[in-house]
Image (cartoon, rainbow, N blue to C red; front, top):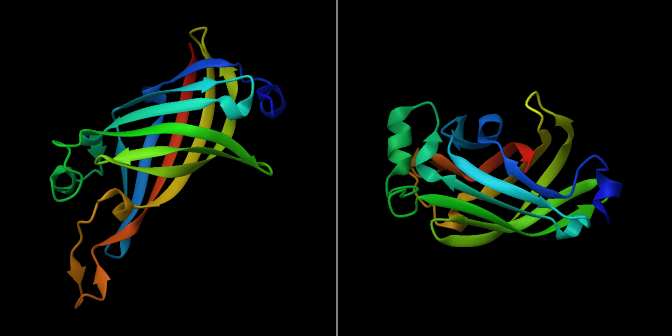
Length: 183
C-alpha cells in the first residue's frame, strides 16, 4: 500500500524526532498503584517510503535519563539491581517492518534492553501533518505496546505478603508521543 493512500499529507523522506515535543513514557504497577515514568534523553528518526511497508524507524534512549519523579527510586532503578545503566547505557528500537491489520497499523521491530534483543510490535496512530511557526513541516504519531520486563532480563523484585504478591508487576506499558520534523 502506498503512503499516498494511507496518509496523503505525509511526505516520503526523513523525519527526525523532536525530543522537545515528544515523550517516551512507561507505566508499571508498584505495590497497589501504578508508577509512571519517562525517559528524557532520546533521539530517533522515521524514514517514510513511498510504499508504507518499506518505511523504517530507529530510536535510541539513554537509560540514565529515567525519571519517575522520585530521585531515590530513580537512583535504585539505574543500579545493577534493575537497569544497570553503567553497563547498558542505551535502549534501542529498529524496525523490521510496517503492517496494517484492517484500519490499525503496527510498527514491528527489535527492542534491545540490557543487550537482550526481542521483537516488539508497536500499535501506531498517525495524528496528522502541519507547518510549524519556523517554516518546518511536522508529523505526529502515537504508539504503544505492553512488554514483560523479564523478557529483557529485568528480574529485580521483592516478594511481599508471604510471597503471594510482588513489589513490581512484570507488565510494563510503553507509550510514545512523537513529533517529527521533515529534514
